[in-house]
Amino acid sequence: MLTAEVASFDIAAAAGWYSAVAGLLAGFALLAVLLPLDHDTRDDDAEAAGASGVIVFTSAFFSLLILAFSYAILSGRSNGPVAAHEQQLNGAAFGLASLLLLLGLREVLRLYGTNRSIMQPAQNLVARTTALWGPMIVVALQFSNTLDTEALREGGQLRLEWPFSSGILINLGVSIVAIILIVLVPVVGRNRHVAAKTTAVIGRVTLGFTVVVTLWCALVVPLLPSDFVLGAVLEHVTLAVAAVAAVVYSWAAWLTR
Image 1: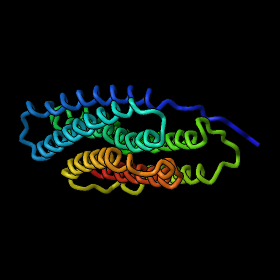
Image 2: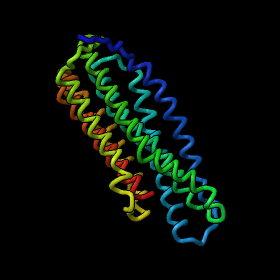
Image 3: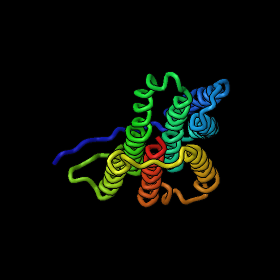
């Protein structure tokens, strides 16, 4: 029988660093809003891309600013059920909000007409990172967060034994399915595109997701029974929500490339 131990994770300490990083990225997003403003173009496509880029960067700024405050509050909590649940949801929102910076960068790169051929390799790299590698990392980190929740439910440390428990297998299955759906994005959507203005919708939806997560954690979760907050059902549902959000984000980012 193969066994391994997942060490205890200090949620409060990590949240303090996340708050600092989110605040730093929010500053970059605010600065990036200014990038398209001094660019003179008569290309309608480039102008639309610039407008979408501003909306994406603005959405990223507000999302990361909200998360900076959320993580700052989380850093003052002890490693309890509420903190573990907030870590899961905030992690999903933080991952998607961070990817908005790359999405906005992709739109800004479209503004350059004369040097567009030089920028094309960078656009392809940003498109793949935003639509493929980034969402995969978000899903993987969310699965890792579920192990922290499992460890907290076990009293601080989680001892993994093969075969794994049903709860871990469910979380692993959800994560693998989500990653497979993300991998299929460039295959199924190779020759498919949607309107460029959909990029702005991605930014707005991500900001809305961050707001909903914050309201849920601030108004609802503290009023729920601790056993339910730390329970396996809510853990699986939270992972599923994060996985669906990552997959939808991936497909939307690829189709608007």
